[in-house]
Picture 1 (cartoon, helix red, strand yellow):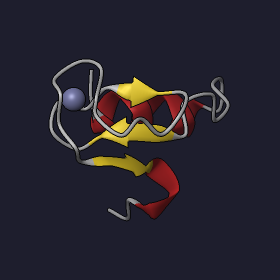
Picture 2 (cartoon, protein in one colour; picture 1 turned 180 degrees about the vertical axis):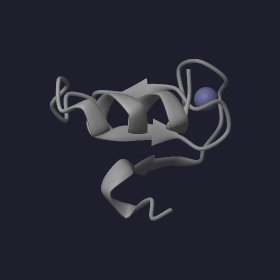
Picture 3 (cartoon, protein in one colour; picture 1 turned 30 degrees about the horizontal axis):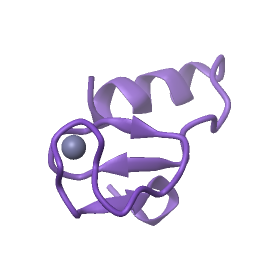
Length: 53
Ligand SMILES: [Zn+2]
């Protein structure tokens, strides 16, 4: 899982923006903006729309 998997899903257009947040440390897709990532405990959870690659 990660940003590339997510990008691939979006590119195919078969997945809407169900997980608008993502952990920058482990790449977990998150439905809400957690203060800390539930997967790895990182504080670096960002809205994916702010991620520009
Ligand atoms: Zn994480």
